[in-house]
Length: 220
Image 1 (cartoon, rainbow, N blue to C red):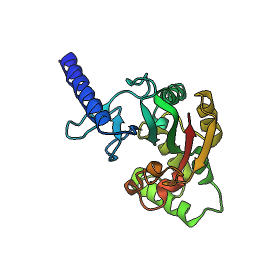
Image 2: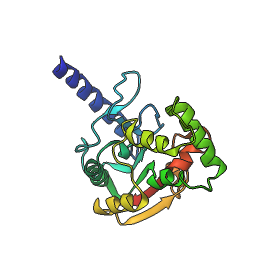
Image 3: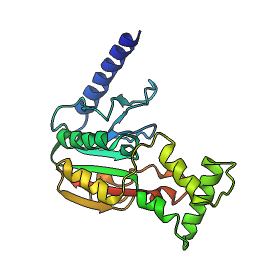
Image 4: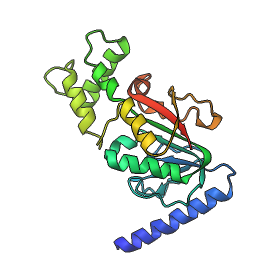
């Protein structure tokens, strides 16, 4: 039964990829899309296997099932933190392999420094609001909703998070993956038209995803 399911998924993947590549001159790969489907992209995910969604399934912690230099752009939002550091480095190397020369990878992920900054005594109104929201939404019933220790433990351990990067470690990983032209970007901002307004800010209250995230673009 499991083999039959894999065969069905394989044929579906092949059809999705063939149809996608046949109708685009600048192929774009969205790694770890979840249910955030981007028009004009090949949306791919490790966990989503819903036949109602046009999602190409593959395990992004392993070798990508694409030929070298297939895509002009690769985008990954809040996905790399769900796999180990070693698997994340492999993922970044695979992103570079499947990019065409001059292609761009955009990666967005939570910033460890954002978590540590929540312990500061001089918090901003946005940080205070985030702490209240996190306590009410993610850790109800804790003894002290203002105690950021609960928030940090929840953030690191829940939702399948495995390795939370700070800027230094993400930059190091990108360089080890073979990228040299690195640019830090604002959320939803890019000098490349098709890389703007991609992040799924609507899944959280206004300003919270921006508070959590760091974004880098790198060119092959």
